[in-house]
Structures are given as structure tokens and as C-alpha cells.
Image (tube, rainbow, N blue to C red):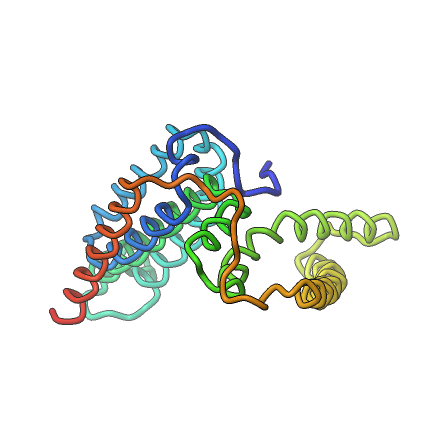
Length: 254
């Protein structure tokens, strides 16, 4: 069973790395995924999952990876390999046909999504949302932009707990969450309405609190305890940024 919190505390070198370094690496992987061939995409995805195991977050990362990527990957292979008409369709059994070019394209699309998903899960599993927010503030990002980037991770645990509390309360009042798919959809509607209503009310309240505290009164925020950063990590970030720029230029000009 999955924990409501995506972040998994630890003492690995990846946990201790500056969030800006990890986010730059994540963006580099995303850009690189559009240049790698299908076999390399799946191999790099497996390597990232192994890195998660070495960092002590492999169980959480792999379980979420399988849960999220498997349905999408199957759908992509079925759609591009057997449903979407192509010139090289070959019969398999009766009305069932397949396309080699379709399967190759499905392997490419599925591999890209697999690589992006694996690297994203590794990032959020080893990066505390509060640490990410402090790193953005220490880098003198505008307060509104840094809060916008980090707030989804900060609020995830709260919304997950609230959704569980609403579900328990609705079931106590007689709401059935089991049965036919139609009944499950009706139960989902009864759960989503109060969750979205409370989320909107909470967002308005947070906005008033931040405004009252002068959240955006100054262009930058002073961080008392910024995340640890080193000269090597700063050099690595700039190197990755240059590498991403070269990759982007190559994709545009080729």
C-alpha cells in the first residue's frame, strides 16, 4: 500500500544534494529523452530505478512507477500496434492485426514516458518540498514563482489526508464505494465535490494569509537556513544547462 507522502526521508547522497541540482538533472533527462532511441530509453529508465534502490527509495519509486506506467504503456502498444491503421498491418488471429512500425513507435513513446516518469518519481521521492522552496528562495527566485512551483508538493499530503477523511465520513453516512463501475463513479462524485470545495476555500484562505504577511512585498526572500550547496554542484548545474541548450539546438536545427 502506498504512503500518502511521496517524499521518503533518507541520508543518501541524492537526498543531500541541492534541490536545484536535482531539478536541473531532471530537466536534462526530459530533454535527452527526445533524442534517445527506444532501447536506450528503457535501459536508462531501469538504471534510474536501480539508483532509487541504492538511495533507499526503490520500493516506493518502483511501485508507483509500475502503477502509473503499466496502464499507459499497454494502451500505447495496443493503440499504435493493433488499432491505428498502418500500411504494414499483418494478420495474427482472425480480425486481430499488428503493425511493426506501430509497435516501434509505441516503444518510442512508451520509453519516453517511462524515462520521464521514473526520473520524476526519483526526484520527488528524494526532495522534501520545504527544502525545494528554500532552495528556490536562496537562488533569489521571485517568491510567487517559487511558491507556485513548490506548493503542489507541499499541499499533496494535506489533500491526501483530507480526501481520506472525507471518504471515511461519507462511508460512515452510508455511502458505498464498492459495487459496479457506475456505482463507483457516483461515489467518486460524492467524494470529489467536498474535496474540491474545501480545496478552493483553503486556497482563498492561504491567499489572504500570504497577502497579510506581505509575501510579495519584496522581490526576494531571505533564507535563514538555505540548503547546502557546493562549488561542484554549481559547476554541474551550469554544465547540465549548457548540455540542455546544445541538445535543444540540435533538435531544432537537425
